[in-house]
Amino acid sequence: MSTALRLVASGTALLLLVVTGSAWAQTPATGPTLPPGAGREIAEAKCVSCHDASRLVAPGYSRAGWQGVLDRMIKIGVQLEPGQVPVLTDYLARSFPAKQQTAANVIVGDTRVSFKEWAVATPGAFPHDPLASADGAIWYTGQHASVLGRIDPKSGAIREYPTRVPDSGPHGLVADAAGNIWFTANYAGYIGKLDPTSGVITEYKMPDPAARDPHTPIFDGKGMLWFTVQGANMIGRLAPGSGMVKLVTVPSAHALPYGMVVSSRGVPFFAEFGSNKIADIDPDTMAIHEHVLPHAGTRPRRLAITSDDAIWYSDYARGYLGRYDPKSGMAQEWASPGGATSQPYGITALHDIIWYSESGVQPNTLVRFDPKSEKFQSWIIPSGGGVVRNMMPTRDGGLVLAESGAGKVALVTIE
Image: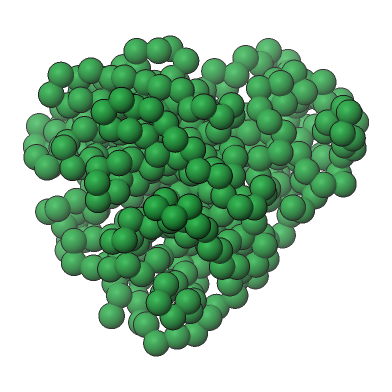
């Protein structure tokens, strides 16, 4: 791991204080100690006290960037006095300024792709997750603007639907069989359902106030909606028919449940971004079983699944692509083309080919990995990417990407 202290907005607005390397002292007896300076006590009290201080590595920020991080942290319930905010912001910006990212490493291959990008309707909306719906439309969550957006790829027309609850921070997206669009309200502790025909949004509040930040949603084959609740360290299940929500706590403390997939047997799997684990949950009893990955430093963030029910993960902390076989318990890893600081993030599987984005290189890349040949190919994302937090296949064999910092959504055509 590289030298860093980080308060990282995970894209869900959950913030982690991450401290590693020689920028700070560490001993077996006392654990990590933040660098000295005005604001250190606030960071220790408000950040390290709530999180394991060894989570992940990410680029630093400018003062404005750190201000944005703290704003989002406050949205999910961290209590800071008004006078503490500028002191803590100055401390973080002074101690951990933005660092230059590694240049993208483009690997040439036989596959051809083309990109088409659209700027979202509301500038600064911060498109977090994309969704390719069955009618051919592309949806996105505008997290900072609290809107859902729909793009017609043929005409380029964009319509945005504001949430009824202000500042909901919509995050993850998924569609049901009837065409309703479901989203996680990451700032407001509810699951939302949008009827695109009427524009009506229905909210399903979390039964536990601690479940403030629902994160990634996914439907199983029986129509049950599963979702992670990152900061609360929970997994949720929502029955659309009754609206009943049930929550269970992940066994490992500070596991930070993140991306989810569902196997061919209807079993949900999720990444524990705060540990080197992937876990599955029994769809009936909601009992959680954790699988430990071989390397202690692995931090799986998003997941993909192939037809053999193998779980693929983007190892954000170490710059690896990983494959875990739940049947055998065996794991394999491949170094990502961009290297140890490439920060693989959004990932999906299309016809058993793995596609993901490197968010820690400049510009961001789209990476293709063929599990049979074990060969990589990569492309620069035209807009720069701005961190592709999630992606998914389209009905006709393409990909949709949400380019958060660039304020764009992309459609990738694979020739």
